[in-house]
Length: 276
Image 1 (cartoon, rainbow, N blue to C red):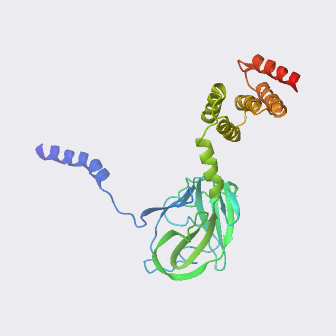
Image 2 (image 1 turned 180 degrees about the horizontal axis):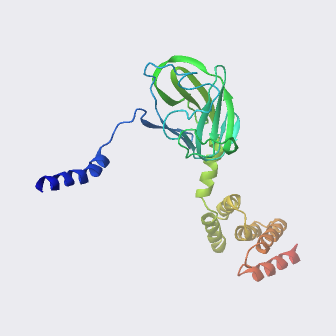
Image 3 (image 1 turned 45 degrees about the horizontal axis):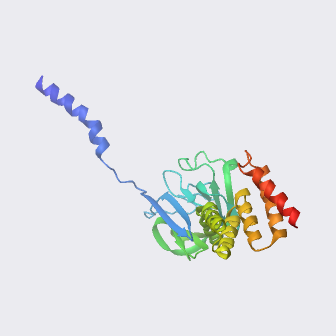
Protein backbone atom coordinates (compact mmCIF):
# COMPACT_ATOMS: atom_id res chain seq x y z
CA UNK A 1 0.00 0.00 0.00
CA UNK A 2 2.81 2.38 0.93
CA UNK A 3 4.55 1.67 -2.39
CA UNK A 4 1.32 2.40 -4.27
CA UNK A 5 0.96 5.79 -2.52
CA UNK A 6 4.56 6.71 -3.37
CA UNK A 7 3.98 5.71 -7.00
CA UNK A 8 0.83 7.86 -7.24
CA UNK A 9 2.66 10.84 -5.72
CA UNK A 10 5.46 10.45 -8.27
CA UNK A 11 2.95 10.40 -11.13
CA UNK A 12 1.22 13.51 -9.74
CA UNK A 13 4.54 15.40 -9.62
CA UNK A 14 5.42 14.77 -13.28
CA UNK A 15 3.35 17.66 -14.79
CA UNK A 16 4.72 20.22 -12.32
CA UNK A 17 8.30 19.08 -12.92
CA UNK A 18 7.79 19.23 -16.67
CA UNK A 19 6.42 22.77 -16.42
CA UNK A 20 9.53 23.93 -14.55
CA UNK A 21 12.08 22.54 -17.02
CA UNK A 22 13.19 24.97 -19.73
CA UNK A 23 14.34 22.98 -22.75
CA UNK A 24 16.58 24.87 -25.20
CA UNK A 25 15.20 25.31 -28.69
CA UNK A 26 17.22 24.18 -31.68
CA UNK A 27 16.41 27.58 -33.21
CA UNK A 28 16.50 30.07 -30.32
CA UNK A 29 14.38 33.20 -30.27
CA UNK A 30 15.95 36.59 -30.94
CA UNK A 31 14.85 40.20 -31.32
CA UNK A 32 16.90 42.96 -32.91
CA UNK A 33 15.79 46.57 -32.47
CA UNK A 34 17.10 49.77 -34.01
CA UNK A 35 15.98 53.35 -33.54
CA UNK A 36 16.18 55.29 -36.80
CA UNK A 37 15.82 58.95 -35.89
CA UNK A 38 12.91 58.62 -33.47
CA UNK A 39 11.30 55.61 -35.19
CA UNK A 40 11.75 52.20 -33.60
CA UNK A 41 12.15 49.19 -35.88
CA UNK A 42 12.16 45.64 -34.45
CA UNK A 43 12.48 42.19 -35.96
CA UNK A 44 11.60 39.13 -33.84
CA UNK A 45 12.54 35.72 -35.20
CA UNK A 46 14.01 32.30 -34.46
CA UNK A 47 17.59 31.52 -35.51
CA UNK A 48 18.12 28.17 -37.28
CA UNK A 49 21.67 26.84 -37.69
CA UNK A 50 23.36 25.41 -40.79
CA UNK A 51 24.66 22.26 -39.02
CA UNK A 52 26.47 21.11 -42.15
CA UNK A 53 23.29 21.07 -44.23
CA UNK A 54 22.76 22.44 -47.73
CA UNK A 55 20.47 25.42 -47.16
CA UNK A 56 19.45 27.20 -50.36
CA UNK A 57 17.35 25.14 -52.72
CA UNK A 58 17.36 22.19 -50.29
CA UNK A 59 16.45 22.91 -46.65
CA UNK A 60 14.91 26.18 -47.85
CA UNK A 61 13.30 25.42 -51.23
CA UNK A 62 13.44 27.93 -54.04
CA UNK A 63 10.28 29.66 -55.26
CA UNK A 64 8.28 28.80 -52.13
CA UNK A 65 7.12 31.00 -49.26
CA UNK A 66 9.55 30.67 -46.35
CA UNK A 67 8.92 31.75 -42.76
CA UNK A 68 12.39 33.37 -42.81
CA UNK A 69 13.55 31.63 -39.70
CA UNK A 70 12.00 28.79 -37.72
CA UNK A 71 9.04 28.05 -35.45
CA UNK A 72 6.72 31.08 -35.04
CA UNK A 73 6.20 33.74 -37.66
CA UNK A 74 9.07 36.21 -38.03
CA UNK A 75 7.63 39.66 -37.28
CA UNK A 76 8.62 43.15 -38.37
CA UNK A 77 7.43 46.08 -36.21
CA UNK A 78 7.64 49.82 -36.91
CA UNK A 79 6.48 52.66 -34.66
CA UNK A 80 5.94 55.19 -37.48
CA UNK A 81 5.24 55.20 -41.19
CA UNK A 82 8.38 54.26 -43.13
CA UNK A 83 9.39 53.73 -46.74
CA UNK A 84 10.77 50.31 -47.60
CA UNK A 85 12.56 50.20 -50.92
CA UNK A 86 10.65 53.37 -51.82
CA UNK A 87 7.13 52.23 -50.84
CA UNK A 88 5.29 53.53 -47.76
CA UNK A 89 4.29 51.17 -44.96
CA UNK A 90 2.04 52.21 -42.06
CA UNK A 91 3.10 51.67 -38.43
CA UNK A 92 2.29 48.26 -36.97
CA UNK A 93 3.49 44.66 -36.69
CA UNK A 94 3.73 42.53 -39.81
CA UNK A 95 4.60 38.94 -40.59
CA UNK A 96 7.85 38.76 -42.56
CA UNK A 97 8.03 36.03 -45.17
CA UNK A 98 10.36 35.59 -48.11
CA UNK A 99 10.35 33.71 -51.41
CA UNK A 100 14.00 32.85 -52.13
CA UNK A 101 15.33 32.20 -55.62
CA UNK A 102 18.77 31.92 -57.17
CA UNK A 103 18.92 35.43 -58.62
CA UNK A 104 16.06 37.29 -56.89
CA UNK A 105 14.21 37.21 -53.57
CA UNK A 106 10.69 38.43 -52.89
CA UNK A 107 10.23 39.99 -49.45
CA UNK A 108 6.66 39.94 -48.12
CA UNK A 109 5.31 41.93 -45.19
CA UNK A 110 1.93 40.48 -44.30
CA UNK A 111 -0.90 41.94 -42.22
CA UNK A 112 -1.15 38.51 -40.59
CA UNK A 113 1.62 38.52 -37.98
CA UNK A 114 0.40 35.50 -35.97
CA UNK A 115 1.06 32.60 -38.30
CA UNK A 116 3.07 29.58 -37.23
CA UNK A 117 5.67 29.56 -39.95
CA UNK A 118 4.21 30.15 -43.41
CA UNK A 119 1.74 27.26 -43.53
CA UNK A 120 -1.39 29.43 -43.75
CA UNK A 121 0.16 32.36 -45.62
CA UNK A 122 -2.38 34.15 -47.85
CA UNK A 123 -1.24 36.62 -50.55
CA UNK A 124 -4.42 38.69 -50.04
CA UNK A 125 -3.05 39.70 -46.63
CA UNK A 126 0.11 41.24 -48.09
CA UNK A 127 0.75 44.79 -46.90
CA UNK A 128 3.91 45.15 -48.97
CA UNK A 129 5.83 42.98 -51.41
CA UNK A 130 9.13 43.87 -53.07
CA UNK A 131 12.14 42.22 -54.71
CA UNK A 132 15.83 42.28 -53.81
CA UNK A 133 18.97 40.61 -55.16
CA UNK A 134 20.75 38.00 -53.01
CA UNK A 135 24.47 38.58 -52.42
CA UNK A 136 27.37 36.31 -51.55
CA UNK A 137 28.64 36.77 -47.99
CA UNK A 138 30.99 35.23 -45.45
CA UNK A 139 29.60 32.16 -43.76
CA UNK A 140 27.23 32.62 -40.82
CA UNK A 141 26.22 29.49 -38.87
CA UNK A 142 23.03 30.88 -37.32
CA UNK A 143 20.65 33.00 -39.35
CA UNK A 144 20.66 36.64 -38.25
CA UNK A 145 19.03 39.97 -38.95
CA UNK A 146 21.00 43.17 -38.45
CA UNK A 147 20.79 46.89 -39.12
CA UNK A 148 23.64 48.50 -41.04
CA UNK A 149 24.52 51.99 -42.28
CA UNK A 150 22.15 53.59 -39.78
CA UNK A 151 21.57 57.34 -40.12
CA UNK A 152 18.93 59.70 -38.70
CA UNK A 153 16.76 59.02 -41.75
CA UNK A 154 17.54 55.52 -42.98
CA UNK A 155 18.96 52.07 -42.29
CA UNK A 156 19.77 48.94 -44.23
CA UNK A 157 18.19 45.71 -42.96
CA UNK A 158 20.39 42.68 -43.60
CA UNK A 159 19.31 39.03 -43.44
CA UNK A 160 22.35 36.74 -43.49
CA UNK A 161 22.65 32.96 -43.31
CA UNK A 162 25.13 30.40 -44.55
CA UNK A 163 27.03 32.12 -47.42
CA UNK A 164 24.26 34.45 -48.54
CA UNK A 165 22.66 37.75 -47.54
CA UNK A 166 19.80 39.94 -48.70
CA UNK A 167 19.55 43.64 -47.91
CA UNK A 168 16.72 46.17 -48.08
CA UNK A 169 16.47 49.86 -47.23
CA UNK A 170 14.22 51.57 -44.68
CA UNK A 171 13.71 55.34 -44.93
CA UNK A 172 12.09 57.52 -42.26
CA UNK A 173 10.90 61.15 -42.39
CA UNK A 174 12.56 61.92 -39.08
CA UNK A 175 12.26 65.71 -39.25
CA UNK A 176 8.55 65.51 -40.09
CA UNK A 177 7.85 63.09 -37.21
CA UNK A 178 9.99 65.01 -34.73
CA UNK A 179 8.25 68.30 -35.44
CA UNK A 180 4.81 66.69 -35.43
CA UNK A 181 5.43 65.06 -32.05
CA UNK A 182 6.87 68.27 -30.65
CA UNK A 183 3.82 70.20 -31.83
CA UNK A 184 1.43 67.66 -30.36
CA UNK A 185 3.20 68.02 -27.02
CA UNK A 186 2.73 71.81 -27.08
CA UNK A 187 -0.88 73.00 -26.94
CA UNK A 188 -2.27 76.35 -28.05
CA UNK A 189 -3.69 77.33 -24.64
CA UNK A 190 -0.60 78.38 -22.60
CA UNK A 191 0.73 80.84 -25.17
CA UNK A 192 -2.77 82.27 -25.73
CA UNK A 193 -3.24 82.68 -21.99
CA UNK A 194 0.10 84.50 -21.74
CA UNK A 195 -0.87 86.80 -24.62
CA UNK A 196 -4.29 87.46 -23.08
CA UNK A 197 -2.68 88.33 -19.75
CA UNK A 198 -0.48 90.94 -21.47
CA UNK A 199 -3.54 92.28 -23.33
CA UNK A 200 -5.64 92.64 -20.19
CA UNK A 201 -2.79 94.30 -18.30
CA UNK A 202 -1.48 96.32 -21.27
CA UNK A 203 2.09 95.06 -20.80
CA UNK A 204 4.68 93.38 -23.06
CA UNK A 205 2.43 93.75 -26.10
CA UNK A 206 5.20 92.95 -28.60
CA UNK A 207 5.88 89.70 -26.80
CA UNK A 208 2.15 89.03 -26.53
CA UNK A 209 1.85 89.25 -30.32
CA UNK A 210 4.59 86.62 -30.71
CA UNK A 211 2.86 84.34 -28.23
CA UNK A 212 -0.53 84.60 -29.90
CA UNK A 213 1.03 83.87 -33.30
CA UNK A 214 2.58 80.72 -31.82
CA UNK A 215 -0.82 79.69 -30.43
CA UNK A 216 -2.46 80.20 -33.83
CA UNK A 217 0.31 78.24 -35.56
CA UNK A 218 -0.30 75.28 -33.25
CA UNK A 219 -4.09 75.37 -33.66
CA UNK A 220 -6.30 78.08 -35.09
CA UNK A 221 -9.56 78.70 -33.24
CA UNK A 222 -12.04 81.31 -32.04
CA UNK A 223 -10.21 82.07 -28.81
CA UNK A 224 -6.75 82.87 -30.10
CA UNK A 225 -8.03 84.85 -33.10
CA UNK A 226 -10.18 86.91 -30.73
CA UNK A 227 -7.15 87.76 -28.58
CA UNK A 228 -5.05 88.59 -31.64
CA UNK A 229 -7.74 90.91 -33.01
CA UNK A 230 -7.76 92.86 -29.74
CA UNK A 231 -3.97 93.02 -29.71
CA UNK A 232 -3.98 94.44 -33.23
CA UNK A 233 -6.09 97.37 -32.05
CA UNK A 234 -3.35 98.13 -29.52
CA UNK A 235 -1.02 98.63 -32.48
CA UNK A 236 -3.61 100.79 -34.31
CA UNK A 237 -4.07 98.13 -37.00
CA UNK A 238 -7.82 98.52 -37.19
CA UNK A 239 -8.36 96.91 -40.61
CA UNK A 240 -6.31 93.84 -39.64
CA UNK A 241 -8.16 93.66 -36.32
CA UNK A 242 -11.53 93.60 -38.12
CA UNK A 243 -10.41 90.80 -40.49
CA UNK A 244 -9.00 88.76 -37.61
CA UNK A 245 -12.14 89.15 -35.49
CA UNK A 246 -14.29 88.16 -38.46
CA UNK A 247 -12.18 85.02 -38.74
CA UNK A 248 -12.69 84.37 -35.02
CA UNK A 249 -16.46 84.49 -35.54
CA UNK A 250 -16.17 82.07 -38.45
CA UNK A 251 -14.48 79.60 -36.10
CA UNK A 252 -17.23 80.24 -33.51
CA UNK A 253 -19.91 79.12 -35.98
CA UNK A 254 -18.24 75.71 -36.32
CA UNK A 255 -18.09 75.12 -32.55
CA UNK A 256 -20.57 72.61 -31.03
CA UNK A 257 -21.85 75.35 -28.70
CA UNK A 258 -21.54 79.13 -29.22
CA UNK A 259 -18.81 80.67 -27.02
CA UNK A 260 -20.13 82.39 -23.90
CA UNK A 261 -18.82 85.80 -25.02
CA UNK A 262 -19.91 85.63 -28.64
CA UNK A 263 -22.40 88.53 -28.28
CA UNK A 264 -19.67 90.66 -26.74
CA UNK A 265 -17.35 89.74 -29.64
CA UNK A 266 -19.99 90.65 -32.24
CA UNK A 267 -20.61 93.99 -30.52
CA UNK A 268 -16.87 94.69 -30.37
CA UNK A 269 -16.53 93.97 -34.10
CA UNK A 270 -19.51 96.19 -34.96
CA UNK A 271 -17.95 99.03 -32.97
CA UNK A 272 -14.62 98.63 -34.76
CA UNK A 273 -16.28 98.71 -38.16
CA UNK A 274 -17.81 102.09 -37.35
CA UNK A 275 -14.30 103.46 -36.76
CA UNK A 276 -12.83 102.17 -40.02
